[in-house]
Length: 308
Image (cartoon, rainbow, N blue to C red):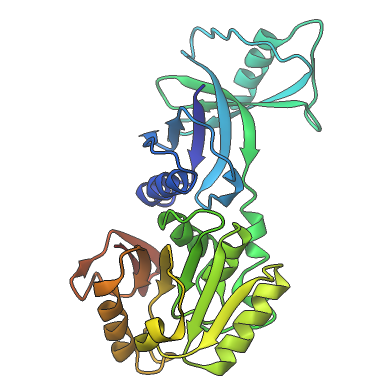
């Protein structure tokens, strides 16, 4: 069985990498096959709601040409049909939705646009239609409920929840494993990890951030956590655990205290760390590492993602 993922369009390479990391977290070694905004896998992972840069996942029914609709599938109960144009072409989707609906209609099923038993989705790629049955819709609006300004405790510098979730997935960490954020701040990364069933551990030099992070985690239902005050140079002395992944947003700018020294200590920590590390920074190069991805934030700020 083939599954099709509709990726968010703003950074397709990053969306593909997140999907690959997510699959690894589900112990699926298969690499997704991407074509434009869609990617495909043969296996169906659990926890599809973990994805941050995927809008929806469908179980593939068929591929067909626009001028010769061949669909060997008939829903058993009620269904809806929606067509999405993934090209820059002018395209009339409503008429095509009607044609597909007529093709798959029988005396036993019916069209229900409000509450269908099956949602049929067709992606127009320019050369073909990729048609499938939706198995998971990822409500990215839920991430906004965890935005910085919505939290009990906030700070001027905090990652967007979608981006924080992407970093977690890039780390390939699985539910039940342990993740450390050594610059946890208000807890944005740890919130997203905790909601995925990952064990979360945090460190911050400021007690105010430690207390605020704990409040935020518990506000979103992440009750089990271990957040401590301390210096990044003393991670190994502070925690006895072995972490499966380290995911963080390195400090930078005037809002951070002595960011250069903290970043230097973090790079030194990575020299002896054997797990997966994913971090963000405001420069393309840091220590011996070069950025894997860049993320445009606004006209005066671009952030960089490193995967070690």
